[in-house]
Image (cartoon, rainbow, N blue to C red):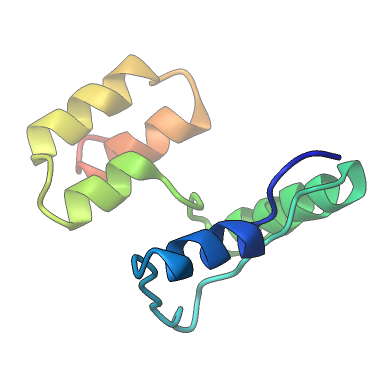
Length: 98
């Protein structure tokens, strides 16, 4: 198909001595989404995790807040921007504003 796979990219980095590896701990998942079916499976996986755990997978604002990269005030502002959505309500809940 004339495209790179992740292993091709890893090989390029390795040849340039620029490859760094970090083992993913429990709670991480690698989902290959190179086909329509695998993309659908990945979407379903994320939906199930979010539904069962009541969390949002890969919520960038939540990650930024938990790492101290944004303040509670900034988190609340993001939540207010999307307040009509479940995503926004989740941000407001995390900011203690709901």
